[in-house]
Image 1 (cartoon, rainbow, N blue to C red):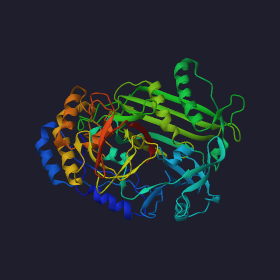
Image 2: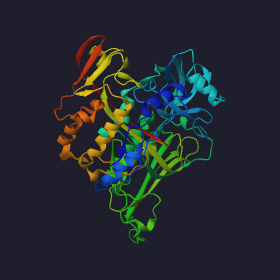
Image 3: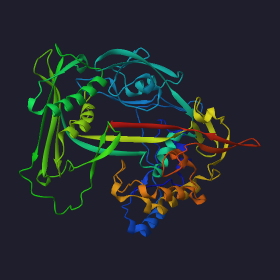
Image 4: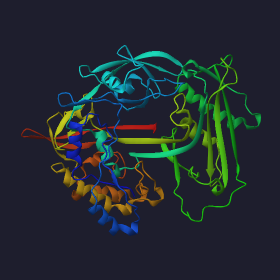
Length: 522
């Protein structure tokens, strides 16, 4: 089990960082987990370690999202970027590397790998990072216009509105991360590495000029497999704005693959009997799936099977036959595995490196997955029962909740607690419900803690009962009220007891389940 608790200083410290940091600390203001190898028979040692250690506040800082405190507000533009060093894609220009879900940037249509050519009609070529940050987040403006270019498309203009909030607020998005041990099934951050090798032409050719594609002729002996592979590639290229042209394509797609027993197999390493299972992200089903692969650093002689899969993008327009881009995977396997499944899962991951290549070998990915109840309430980080702001057009706003309201209870849980109280209660809950975890679901999270586990499906009733106890002090479990292990009834209506002046009002909010999954190359 992976243990995450809130330190007694977490909320005040987070407010200080929000107020005084030059750079905006976006929703990854994290409450880090204790690095503890947990087995059920070590409960006593775990309790001692939990009581002795103070959690470290892990902060993921997006340096490219420049935010300044303006009249006690913090603002964000909703995306991050790199200054490209690629001769084939946006050389010397900012290239988008992440778009924040539900942000104005996402709603405007900004995409991963878009080249930002100008900001408010100012060309980005030759600008310093400080100049870029000032243009992206100007002090005197709350809206910017980006001219961007992507594969298959000519330049287009996007109008992006800065999103600002009071510096003392904490959002439900942030709280969902802080309390994700209530629901690792829906809210978690993980990392993995794929053993890809990416090769790019040495010619300084602009990939943006190649807009149409076609596939090389099919191997008639593997029609079903090749159709599956080509369909997966086609879907990714279409999402990038490219169009198939069977008569005169700019590029040709050529695939190759191999799977067989390893003739040099010598058996598993006797010094490492219990290897941790590996997981990869399945885009089609939006989940991590276990795969029978060995770590890419493992000796080849330990693999019973070998798998190779790759595809090339070949020039057909300028210098026919020139390989513009190629991605090849070489996997070590402990069991047999279908090439169709490998292609379906890994082609989307491979295509993330086209046209903008960040790594040429062993590509690291980070997946952030969140599903939580969104009401639109923003809380005071110093005093969590105080509502600082309510998003317009949100479920809470529709229910009549307003800024300045005091939340006395959420469900049966009181809110008049200190951050220390919530910290201690959260820690107790995690420790007291260890037996309700399913050890078969063990995985390592993005912070490198290898004993995270989902709830045991046969113990949902006990989990919900433990959450409802008054000493659990778990008002923010409402963020996961739609799950059967938090709320077995299936009714996702949340009841808030609100105090407004001398009046007390019981308000029923029907939240929206806000879901997002972002995968980034780190």
